[in-house]
Image 1 (cartoon, rainbow, N blue to C red):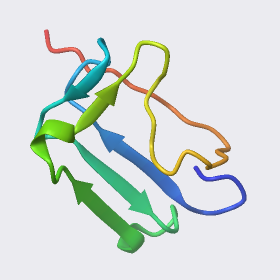
Image 2 (cartoon, rainbow, N blue to C red; image 1 turned 90 degrees about the vertical axis):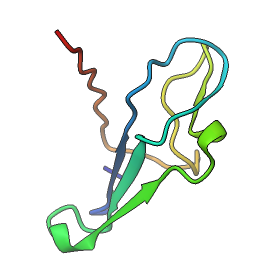
Image 3 (tube, rainbow, N blue to C red; image 1 turned 30 degrees about the vertical axis):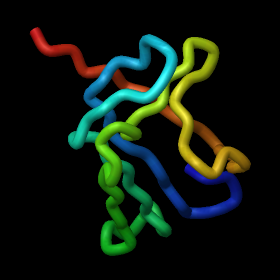
Length: 82
C-alpha cells in the first residue's frame, strides 16, 4: 500500500531472487489498484523484454520502480511446489 493513498501495487515472479543480474521469464507481472477498495481500478503490466524481466542483486530485495515510494506496509510470499 502506498503511504497516504488508497493505491496498492504488487506483482508475481516465478523465479528465485538468487544471483546478480537479469533473469528471463514471460510469467512475471505487476498490478496496480489506484483504489485498493475497488477492483475496477486494477491495471496489469506484463514483461515486454524477455531478457530483462527480473533483476536480482544479493544485497537488495524486490524492487518496484519508481524507488522513491513510501509504503505503509508490504508483504512478500514464497510459493513452494511439493
